[in-house]
Image 1 (cartoon, rainbow, N blue to C red):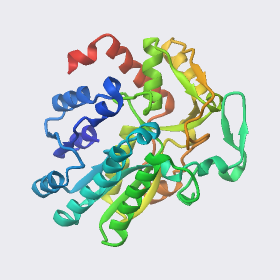
Image 2: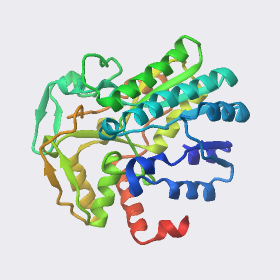
Image 3: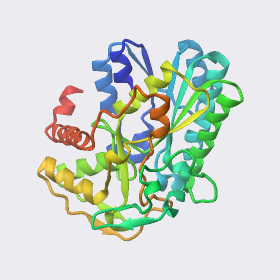
Length: 341
């Protein structure tokens, strides 16, 4: 997001206290990304601020007077939420409310883009009829082939505590748009990724899979025979979507945002693609214990966003995403990332 808007000439203020390293350990550390942004983006200003700190968030928004706020801060793991429920809810729900209220008080005309998650649908997508093939699960009905759209219910299903905290934030962002008329927008993301993703075992599936394969480290598949399907969208395409909303905001709207069918693949299929592009074949371990509330097959239906913003479309294919991540993982192993930082 910072790199994209820097290229457009904007002054970007980044808020991050690297709590991802606290959540996920060294593999989740974003310090190297911060160093790269500082080196590459001359208009970027970093603020080491916790979104849970209400007074600090309020003061920063008042001082900066932003035209656009892209809220991507989150505790993003199913499993970690169960171990740290207060941290999960305080970051995901409380942090969102802090940002929304600071926006309403100081810059009510600003565009507010929130990165929610497809986990707000809980395990409801698993109720769709599915067919099992040799390498993946897929939708059995032709009507479902395009994927999950925004009409999928968020009620009567299991979300995980993470999914529940994101539902709270998701609905609050919508309400600030509908009740107060603010220019809010919610992206219910599929798998958002890229070469700078600090992937960890508990979050960031594709990036973590690539890093473990290139480094020859062990990887464990959790349930569904490795045939569970996800669609991948590159962070640059998400940034372009945020720019489209900024140019033409539609208050209170919700959009499913992911890679769609063209960028969808199962874990097994991703392992094969990584082997093809890296020359390193991963031999994963397996635990027949799916993560609770996890999706068997999730493909994003992009119809609504494409209809509202026809100038936007995906520019990164799945192969290009994996190829980019393989190159970055090799650079990191060879120490190039540290030299750049």
